[in-house]
Amino acid sequence: MTFEVNKAVIPAAGLGTRFLPATKAMPKEMLPVVDRPAIQYVVEEAVEAGLTDILMVTGRNKTPLENHFDRVLELESALEERGDQHKLEAVRHASNLADVHYLRQGSPLGLGHAVYRAHQHVGDESFAVLLGDDIIAEGGQLLREMVRVHRETGASVVAVQEVPQEQVSSYGVVAPQLVDGEFKSAGDYEWPTYWVNSLVEKPAVEDAPSNFAVIGRYVLRPEAFEILENTPPGRGGEIQLTDALVEMAANREETGGVVALVYGGRRFDTGNKFEYLKANVELAIANAEHGPEVREWIQQYAQQLAQQTKNGN
Ligand code: G1P
Image 1 (cartoon, rainbow, N blue to C red):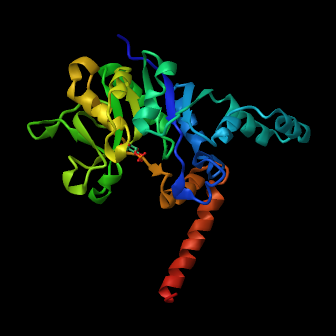
Image 2: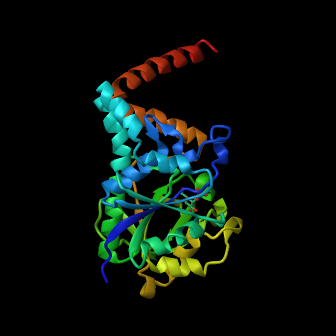
Image 3: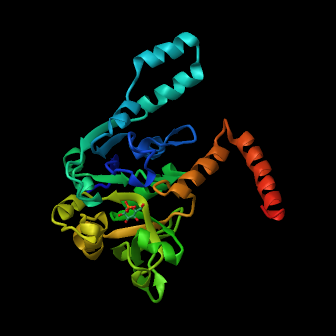
């Protein structure tokens, strides 16, 4: 069996209610982060990791996503006539990025169901799942490393990050395997990797087996599909991807088990308003074109705020 990964699945069927009214008439995935829609970062990340066959599992009112990754010939010729090479390249970049396919989820039965819907497209191969709410700085590098861990261990791989204890109930949380009081490593990689004994979806703080939270990047073996097909609704009445991973972790013989890779870089949960704003500021500073002026302005503004605080207003 080989564990090559060529396809990425991006579930994008959510309603985006946390961003209303901004998302009343526009999918949340199209909210801009600096100079492009949030979803473009996720597609770019998959492409950077070498996955150019992308399946988006969408829902109603998601046509703008399809339009964004398609060509707009009249816009291209208008920009060409004006000689605006810079914008022309930006416009073409989005449509040349990857081979993007679309599938509607149908009933909104949960993340596990959205992933299960990808079965026919993915077939009997390992595949990656990227959740659109998470924007990961150096995400391409992370995903490439996850693919490497998968290829070398044959396990399904989840990216995790340590979060403060009070935040564990917003995430899937892993229970790493312990040997003599130490987490059992899965090998020598760019970031620490641990074999996973089990996982819990959004546990109460007192029930969390660790503070390693799953951050919306997965590399899964195709056995996940069979398991998802038989996974009953779990937390929140939804079919949970985490529950399928619990079964894979428990049945290492047949499914290859689960490894957690502890990503040490920056990640933004753009499903959360404050994090979304932070992503805009930090990624604007990291942006080659706008970075220097944004940094200078923020420094000045921070001084102004500090002065106001000092003056008591
Ligand atoms: C989903 C997963 C959860 C994971 C999270 C990462 O939850 O179910 O296990 O930790 O994504 O963003 P959601 O945020 O969609 O509720």
